[in-house]
Structures are given as structure tokens and as C-alpha cells.
Image 1 (cartoon, rainbow, N blue to C red):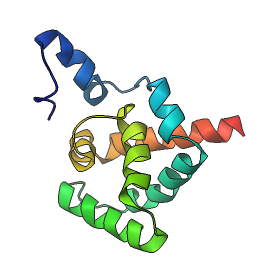
Image 2: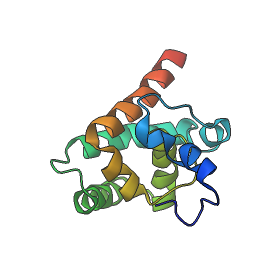
Image 3: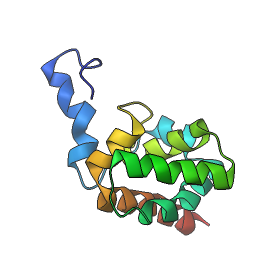
Image 4: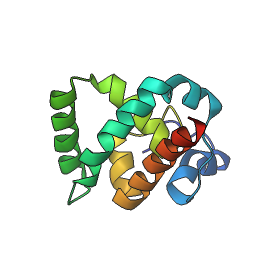
Length: 123
């Protein structure tokens, strides 16, 4: 997934740590740019679509997000960037469907809920 971006072996841990850790540290710049009020609203609205996925694979995730786009009228960039930051803590990385599938439903849902709960505490 990150093969093209990694230059040395020493860089590998920093590129993949969000796959391995339960609690991730969010990049400040990523949060400020994509998890603003609109971004948080979008991932909040997206959560039920992801929860309904019975098989958390690329095909079903694509279908769920396609349905979400059709029903809510969002563009892919409006959804993919906040979702990527919510589940991986960063702005760059592999394709969003690959990230979601690799992390698995439980971890993805947990990370999205963490962002939502953090927002509710700040209200």
C-alpha cells in the first residue's frame, strides 16, 4: 500500500502505525483541515451506512458509500477526506476502501465514534 512512498526501512513504522495501534494520535493539520464541523457531520451521517455492512470488504463498502452519496448528495472528496482522517489520523495513505477493509468494521466504527463523542463533549 505504501510501497511507493516509503524510501527507507526506518520510515515503515510511521507509515503503518495506525493499522496496528488501538489508540491513534491525530495529525493536527489533518484534523483542522478535514474534521471541521462539516467533516464531523458527514462522518456522523455516514456511520449508519458503515454499521449496516454485513461484510466489510471493498465491494460492499463501495456500494454503501455509493448509496450514501446518492441519498445525501455529497461529492466523494467531501466524504473521503474526513473519513480517512477519522480512521487513519492522516491526510494521505492508501485508498480509503483498502484502509477500511484492512482495519475492519469494529476498529473503523470505534474510531468514528471516538471522533463523534469527542465533538459531543466539546458542545
